[in-house]
Amino acid sequence: MAICELCLVQEKQPTQPGTDPGASSGAAPFREVTWESPSNIALVKYWGKHGLQLPRNPSLSLTLDQSRTRTTVRWRKGTGRMLDFKAGGEASADFAARVGNYLGKMQQELPLLADLDLAVETSNTFPHSSGIASSASGMSALALCLCSIAASAGELPEDGPLFRSKAGRVARLGSGSACRSLCGPWMTWGQTEAFDDSTDDYAIFVEDVAPEFQTLRDAILIVDASRKSISSTVGHAMMMDNPFAPARYENARRRMLEMAATLRNGDTALLVEIAEAEAMELHALMMTSVPSFILLKPATLSLIERVRGFRNRTSIPVCFTLDAGPNLHLLYPESAEEKVRALIADELQPFCAEGRVIYDQAGEGPTRIA
Ligand code: PMV
Image (tube, rainbow, N blue to C red; front, side, top):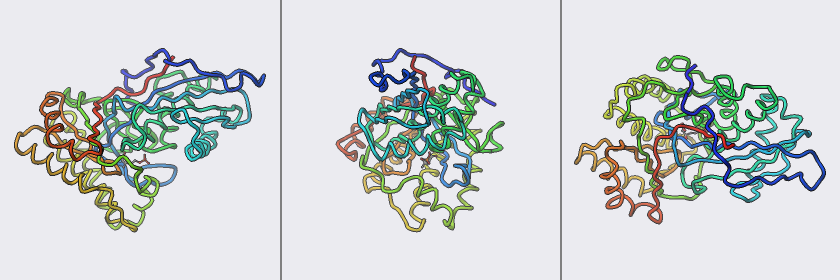
């Protein structure tokens, strides 16, 4: 199995000391673990699943650097309850229910959880509903915390291939794309001939990547920061009856082979072509599902036109991709930073909600906070 050497446990000091939810009750003291994990953006998209969150096609993504979730889990001997949950410093009933349900299911994966009480605290470095996939960063950070708890009880090694593959599986069961956040800058998930050792169970690190793709930039142009009108769970389910699904899965499998060669050779033109074809196909699938969803906004299309116009005029290999929402991820090489920033300021920012742009770039994966 390919394992990313770069992100094998780096430790940082915490910025804030933790509190002990059980301190005043006389109960056993809590122990705690904290991980910070990034989001990722897929260039070959995962859209359609089966069984236990298994992908219908392989996918490939760029791990982000700045857009991260920091999660602390406190635990003590107990009866498998979640005693407390906070997101961004606040209680959130919806989110707590989702996490509680997930933790219940994870008792099968990590049996020691049935004998622990947990308190979870999580916060993002990026604004909620900014079009950045918080489920990928959130679920990967939580999965890493749970696996570190298992490791502290001697049920897993502290790190290394076994820890990583288990964390990948536990993350995947929370949110499919989350398993691609466990390393970087490039990850692939799902069985494909393009990468040895690839599996549907968890994502693996892409080893052979040309230097220009290891520092790729991603400027996220926020067209609409409101909640997206379709959850990915509903979107994946709608692929079951989509008449274009077989062609879609075939395209994704072919593009994985092309992307493996592209990343290796530094073939920018092909990366541009595949990234945009995948973004368009994802949204075409949503439009042709029943019921049909149009998540693109007029401003998204205006941005796409301008990005393509700029590329045709300058031959600078800037391209876009999209998640299941209207916000554009602008991908470009580090060498084009200055010119693309000027393009954003002059032509693109006026189409963004309150002019919002989040500048991110290829990252190396999660960090354990000491
Ligand atoms: O991981 P999920 O279930 O939120 O699905 C992610 C789906 C897309 O973001 C649209 C594509 C992808 O591969 O990340």
